[in-house]
Image 1 (tube, rainbow, N blue to C red):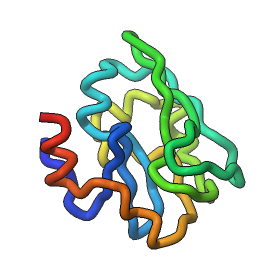
Image 2: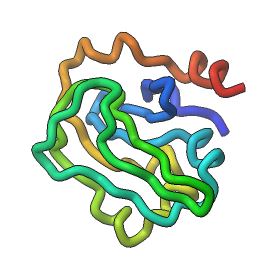
Image 3: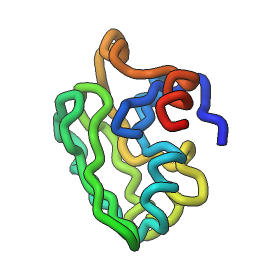
Amino acid sequence: MAYPDHYKYSKDHEWLDPKDGKVGITDHAQQQLGDVVYIELPEVGARFKAGQSFGTIESVKAVSELYSPVAGEVVAVNAALKDKPETVNADPHASWMIVLKFEAGDTGALLDAAQYADLVK
């Protein structure tokens, strides 16, 4: 799968859309997890540092932490994932989990699509 060029990626396999602050997991991450059965997400208003865990994702194989790609405040949560966590498997790059309000300059440590694709080869 191609990784969207306009997203930024963390080495923890999360993506960030710098335009709107949406955060989700990458296709590579959902493949490693297998069938997702549960996602625990934070409340709106929660604040996270870059690299801090903002929730968990559970699959038939494992439970994994979800890490914030940048520091910021949660301004929206995708509540639909609570009822349909398997959506992440079907389209991980459209299945956002949270929206972060963050400083525009904070994305410098993140990878672009080509760098992330090289990381997961």
